[in-house]
Image 1 (cartoon, rainbow, N blue to C red):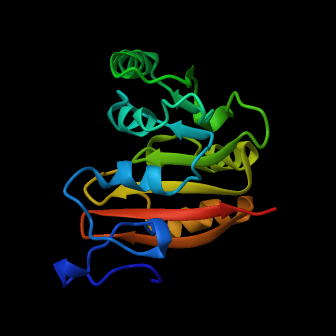
Image 2: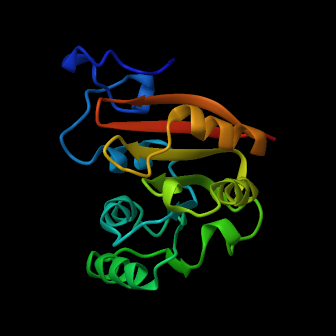
Length: 195
């Protein structure tokens, strides 16, 4: 597939998204999902993260946005209020601001206005949503035209969705496939919101 790296050559593993200036850098040992989330948004952006868990990756992401001139927000949405409480504690301890916390079932809709976000990120969560199609439909509604939907899927996750299955979910809802990248352990799959 376009964007996939040669998995036989470890030196060919790359970050899932272009670095500034369009240069692709080697994949770091640190969680690649954090890098993907940061690289795939404009300097000032409103982000939505479905299924953030305890918020570890969200803390890294939002720490970069503490400058008062940024104005961008991060809105976390999870079915488990206790996970949101853990995320809130981590983000508060890290001094992260401009973060909202919302609980509910992503398959039943999202509590955000239409065309609110520049980026929506789901890390190993779409396979756990009972109505994945409704979740993607809801994400289509809250992303601005040209916004990016990013899926991170680990190969060892028993609920993992393949690239083909993600395309079958996203494309009928008004998303265009951008690319996929990863290595033998994970995939990053990006779509853009059409018009």
